[in-house]
Image 1 (tube, rainbow, N blue to C red):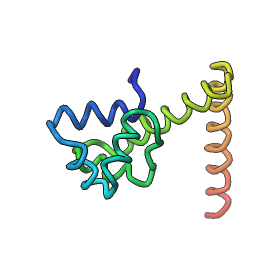
Image 2 (image 1 turned 90 degrees about the horizontal axis):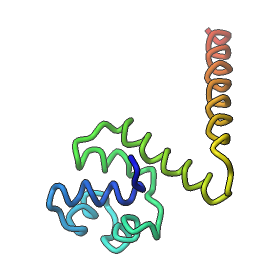
Image 3 (image 1 turned 60 degrees about the vertical axis):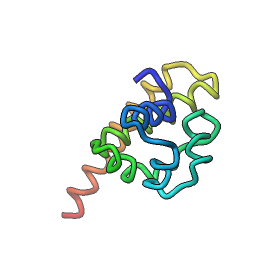
Length: 108
């Protein structure tokens, strides 16, 4: 996806022909805040991902990945870091997965 998470939400909403008010009600939030999210002036709250997925009948894991990728991209852009940061993060994720797997086998 080459758009922000807020733009993605707007696209989903418009594809259903829904108003800001209708989607905001499903997400238990104010339509003004949803507008700010769609316009990139406010961040989407990750705790609402399941509600968003349910509203559009989307896979919650895929939607979470879209949300997190947006967060990573914004952090890298804001800090003026290189894309090498993504490679380092990927290595750290693998390390944490291995570490967790080892701890799980020890606890069995």
